Length: 332
Ligand code: KDO
Image (tube, rainbow, N blue to C red; front, side):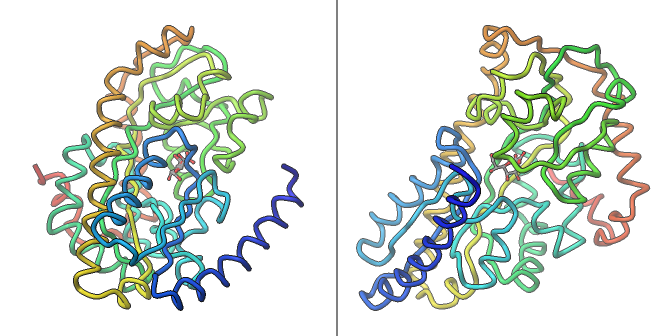
């Protein structure tokens, strides 16, 4: 699809969804538009079907859930603004999206901070999550309903090279999503971070405009990046998450019973995603080897040290709430 035809479709979609919104409300249903850049075969795309099905069972006829994948409705990272404008009801937003508007949230964009998916769930489903999500609601006008594990990010290269420490990534054009918080992570890894939207990554790898990208293994499979790369470097640099969030206008208009059902549906979706992802992450190295990729393990301690030093000395760390780092580390 050309950029123009996509823009026309998008504009038509927005007009239609505006009309649908009024129509759906008039018919007594609340419209829930969802937008994600995820590709259909990825678990955090499929989890939205679980959300929709769960809600249709628990609240039949009350909601009309519309799932839009592949960034077809809003471009990656634009979801919080679309929710604030009343053009989108639900999305899975990243710590990086939040940090743009709430600088203290950048603590969750730091490499080698969260230890594993279990640590992540404990942090966000406990007092730290309650406190930080309250700030998110106050600042962004969205309520977080559940935390989905996106996976542990690994470096994935177009050409094979020996990578032991961050110095070995010097000059490597490593694609990162386009915000300064993401670019900082790429730089901390020792690479030359290059901003690019998720939807452009496959072609970028194929044509060589980028030398590599970083993503969790299930996404490398689902988006087929393994077809256009030759190496996976298991840096495990970020235990990444996505927050299933609803616009506060929708949340505040819902009855207490509806809120409970929305939350339960989001939690069922996150559970589905988390279980599948964790299971798949444990199996994928074998799959990639079968596809002909070299899978190498660098000196992870050297990467951890360099990345943690970079964050400790960073401008963004100045916005982190007092004592939060210790509280995160101490959560078990
Ligand atoms: C990506 O662009 O690399 C990323 O993994 C960033 C995440 O925050 C999230 O937007 C994700 O893409 C998309 O959901 C596509 O999987």
